[in-house]
Amino acid sequence: MAKMKAFVTGYSGQLGYDVVRELDKRGYESVGVSSKQLDICDRDAVLSMIKQIKPDVIFHCAGWTAVDAAEEPENSGKCMAVNAGGAENMAIAAREYGCKIIYISTDYVFNGLGTEPWKPDCKDYEPLSVYGRSKLEGELAVAGNTDKYFIVRIAWAFGINGKNFVKTMLNVGKTHSEVRVVNDQIGTPTYTGDLARLLCDMAETEKYGYYHATNEGGFISWYDFTKEIYKEAGLSTKVIPVSTEEYGISKAKRPFNSRLDKSKLIENGFVPLPDWRDALKRYLKELERSDQI
Figure 1 (cartoon, rainbow, N blue to C red):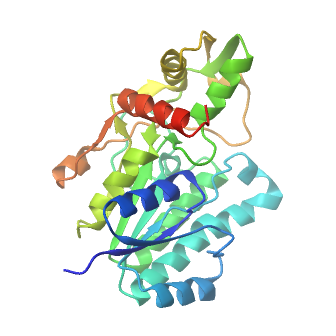
Figure 2 (cartoon, rainbow, N blue to C red):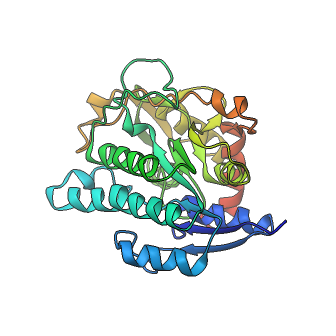
């Protein structure tokens, strides 16, 4: 049996970087590109590259993730072009050249209300932000243009490459004696090193559809997460819980309920991600080794 060949967008970001590392570990051939190497908004360029590389699977990890900046009038169109238009171009290329596509989405496609975990096949979309709308449009473009798709929603991602909440909190913790963190937005973190393993597992199957994937270990607030980060990093910074309202208004509305129901993973035979506390420990060790901590 021929080895799988993969094409990975967003290679300069957290997830794309880890996906390429995981593919390398498995001995698969992979081509990872950043936005400098491919403008995903340029359909002709996308089709040309996929035609040339002939991958078996596209891991579409690229995206506009600056949630607040997307609310600026001069940026909203760009965010939509990248997240919706780019995903559509990738899906059309996947259909055209017969490859699978894995599209990374977010809980921001929902309204973030209530306390019930969102199910992957729930269609009660009601995004609160430009970013959420752009990712939903991307989902619909992928599902509307090919049958061989995995749409995987994640939340609170952190990885070795690029910026994330954990790195920000570590930097703040080293320079501040106390930090205010919201306590009323609830979800579960996603370590991209663990997620990459699951996505590669998916790519080896034809169990297409919508999935939710975050680490296991229950639902927590950003406040809970920060306390654990400081505990594991040996920092004595005091963490003060505040409401979203007390914290101050962000340009983009944040979901209060980022709980994702991941039971479909087990139902379809996939191994869930480990406990987020375990993931955090491993991640902090990786940061130390890479001199980023």
